[in-house]
Image (cartoon, rainbow, N blue to C red; front, side):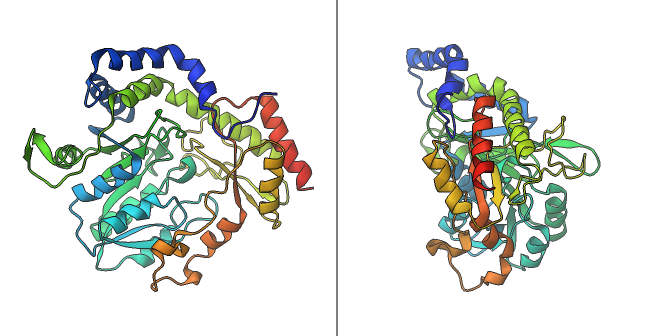
Length: 387
């Protein structure tokens, strides 16, 4: 059996080596390292894939969130509601801009923002909602958009983990994750479903005026060289990373399908185990679908995350490492408990689900190159330990 990786980027590269190498060589030959032709080509390709009017590439997913908020004109003290159970970048940019982060609990089954908690958190100072499509599944955007419309709020989708996923609305229409709110953002960190070989990110919107503003912001506020019309930042996707992403984008759907197939194997192996809760897939097309239906397109399994309910999560984490099986705990500390984001406004009783998840979640290897031998070894090792 080949060595098990948490993410097998080398194996994936071997499948697309010729295309990637050609793209990188094109950049090296042209020396157009910043804002070169491949950046614009990738931008257009991604706009077509997402069916969105504007993609603005940038340096990383955190910058994407920050610039999106800057572009919307949010002001110091404005409240921005987001999920407590996610990576810190989401709340980090809110704090950096001197906005007021408001953290709320998540759903126990999907790990996405809890709609009732979201409703309760709205005040006259609330100006925006940041739903995080965690681990690859789109949040309940029907409800989020209804709430935003009722309260005149911006919606900024944190789509760092769910690029390629579809969201089916209650009326049957579909949109790609990240293209539903006023603006969406993503990360192209190497381990993402669509990842480059360094840092990278992008911002999506159908709003022409907002897109124009953001295009200047990512380039020092310039629309014409040396003329700075808005306060901006230096956040550009370099041409080599754009070349890698352009080579990978045609494979994104197959990458997502490979991850779903691995998730199906995991779910089947762990079915009905008394100490394991497998990921729940929710869609307006179907009922909750723990088996991951054959037409699943609403979850792209950036992570495959179990809940271990018998108190042995930490022991399992160590046991897997001891047996050569990489795994991770995403996330071991709730954002409201992090030293940087503690606030007297929060009560522990407001976060029952998050406080439980940080004790029970464990993420298993999940990538495009997992084979059946590896999956059998991983699942049997877990089952044997939890007997």
